[in-house]
Image 1: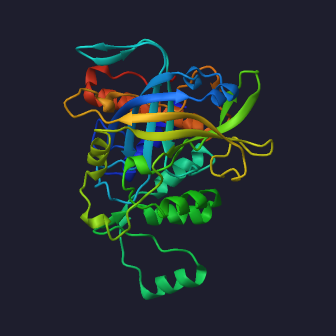
Image 2: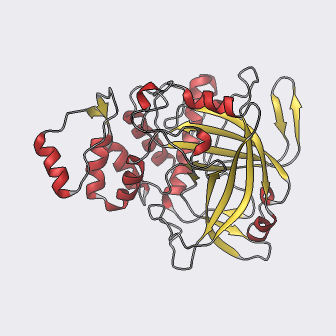
Image 3: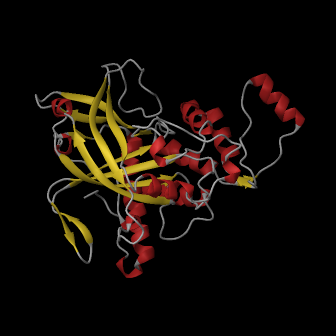
Length: 356
């Protein structure tokens, strides 16, 4: 898995030539938030994981933009929300800030409801197809062909001269499971706030209820204030860092709020295929509420050194046999190792093999 993780990270790096050493290969630009999560009484019935008890749990959150560059916030891309649940006692250390003595578990989410490919091999192939190439203005013939075949042209952001979109679209035309992801991501507009998007964990997890029953579930965060995005005409006039500034402004006097829900699978839904959405009529359970504040800049919280991983789980939640989920676990470990090496080269160690 380490070799595959290295290949995936290398492919991500080639997709973003402007990538800065010491930052994440994707979701490189991020902002921090801290908060509290409280599970519902109904959640305890469906999952015995300790953070789903009806008590407050401390969390650290990293909101991010999806690519590996430090592009302006208005750029068309996926957004991420990585949540770390700090289970157990918490305290305060003058040198290190807030400390925690218990276990941790992570939930990695993005604002598209599905993943790109069914297998790691296809994911690597898609990344290799997405190497940036010069943007060309579509000819009259290209526009006519797109109209007749109902296949959209590659979208172009204002001022964009290099793009990986053309290669990704060519890949998706040959590999149909990627079509839904490409369509969903191509329709994304810049959110008015990180607090105004729905975020999905995309993979299914095995959840154990308090009666010992096991179910497959997919988690997603719904914004309490609803979903809202800017139009394309608004994007050129937005501050390059408006999302981080908005988060700080919105949470000065009041908390940002999300509801965490879990969609349950029916017996014929495939928990190992993240490229397919489950039907909308599947049961959804309210698992808890999340309240967030953005700490002011003078408060030390080096979110870029913090590791988030979709495989960092606690009893009550288990992995599926989804091969892309397992590949992501290895890739997140390798990403963390490379970031640590860039920040402190003497600490360079062999690739990690676990998420502990």
